[in-house]
Length: 261
Image (cartoon, rainbow, N blue to C red; front, side):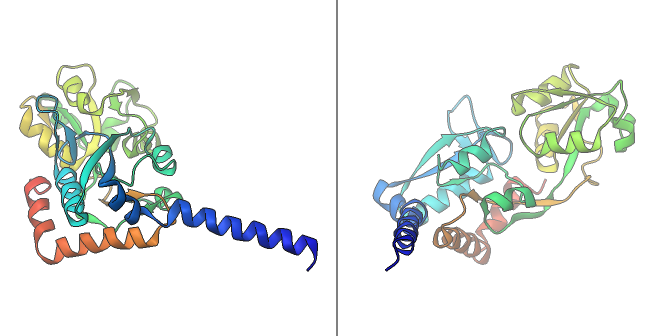
């Protein structure tokens, strides 16, 4: 056999073995480990929020995480991540799956795997503002003015939306997403770019806040469970769990509990 062909065949076999080692064993690894590693930001009410009083994660994604872990017969090992590092952490394999209200979009689907959708028809970009200013902000044009201070968290779709649609407003990047509603309420910013489900919860929690455009969001999208590409068996399993939860009504109950307000 030609030496170049032998070298190529050896290289091909090595690559196949490497790919198999890296990607083919999430279900086996989880079973052997006894835990499923779940990446989450913990800063997104009502999806995944780390309650500072209890030290526990709350929200629909926390309940979905537990249901997935229960289906596998393992415990949850939460791995903190952030919106700026979510993609890099996923690609680096720091966790098996990520759940924290992650929008399904083309950019993520190009480099990572995303589960089937949940929360369909519920999510969309909107604004949070002080109740006293609610009548001032009835459109993007009302917001996109030099005197309007828009606060955003870095790394996620809120920041992308703001940069794409607000060219005149003053954009203020604030590292702690869960703290932005308070910043708006106290007058340190005028607007928060957020999701409809998050806005709904914050106007319940703080009577100084309003979401005047919540019923007519700027965008529409759904959420998905994020993971590395390459393990179709694992992706199929996650989609199977979601399908079962839809079929038996569990997912609808969770969506009604957390998302439909």
